Image 1 (cartoon, rainbow, N blue to C red):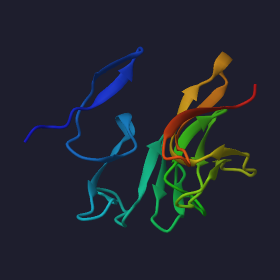
Image 2 (cartoon, rainbow, N blue to C red; image 1 turned 120 degrees about the horizontal axis):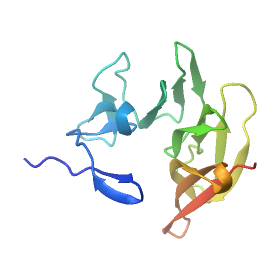
Image 3 (cartoon, rainbow, N blue to C red; image 1 turned 90 degrees about the vertical axis):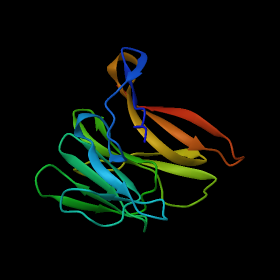
Length: 170
């Protein structure tokens, strides 16, 4: 069997990256190996204490985000602190934001005409923004002048898709 082709962006070019031979939770050096659940669009981690069925998740800077099929997420902060987040959809990721790791989380509604992106911090407050369609992917990106930004992969109500950029202020 052929091994999967993995591409990564380096210096503005796509180059062949290391293949893992299967799905992962997160990407890059901190990615954790996972396995597909037979007959379902779900994952399980292949190492570590969590063995439940996951919708997906992310790993970044010692934090772990586990997306559960019931629309909740478990955010395991560095150390042992665990926060349960409610109403979290597929468009969720750990993102660096103003010197800390936060959860950028879409809502869990299956087919909204408008989704809400929340930026959950380890302290308080959750700034949010409405986005037409359903947010399916969230990734951090550098904004103008070094300000933080997020790139969203959105499924639009007309069945199309688009990329949207959400920028943080100075």
